[in-house]
Image (cartoon, rainbow, N blue to C red):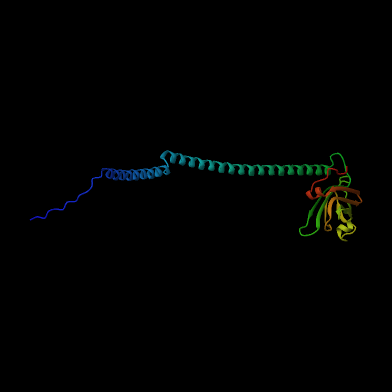
Amino acid sequence: MSPIPSLVIRRHDPARQRRTRLLVAAVWLGSLLIVAGLVATLLSRAPAPSRAAEFAQAQKENEALKSRVAMLERSEQVAKAALGDVQQTLRDREEEIDGLRADLAFYGRLVGGGKREGLAVHALRVAPIAGSQAWNFAATLTQNFKRGAEIKGRLTLTVEGVADGKLRTLDWSALSQGQEASGIEYRFKYFQQVGGTIMLPAGFAANRIVVRADGDGGRVEQEFSWKDAVKGEESDNVPQ
């Protein structure tokens, strides 16, 4: 004989069932909202295809501009260097032309040009000796008064300048340090460069130099600014 199944008696509660269904629905809806939020966040962070293309184009244009600027800068540097070379060449040519004009005037005086001149100091050049207070000098003497006749004499220098805030003049004996005390001998018919060495004391700032030539061709003095003598420029005040 089969056993009689036991009966379970449950209380019917429709309100409780509704609450359970509502809770399950709320949980499901909440999970959908969370998933939707995550998807929206990921999509917002990922660049859109159009924006990515714009960004790539902007980068390309920026690189092109950088290359253009670099090329312009190089072109400007090349142009400046070329301009500097041209300007230096022009200065060199002007100096060369000035030198040729001076040489032309010099030889013109020697050949006469219808006018004869006595003894004259045509030019003076001084140059420092490295590592010392000594200076080499070369004075150019000319004459065409006695054509074919030799003249002779001696040449001396005097240098004027400033030392210890005071004007000071150095005569030949001080400049030559006792060497060739009577001056440097010259002997020529038309022109000669007379050279030698002078010594300046430490702290002495020279501003003018006087060349004296004294002999059977007469006596002449010619002043030069120290600056012009260092440059080797010729005086425009050559005695006539």
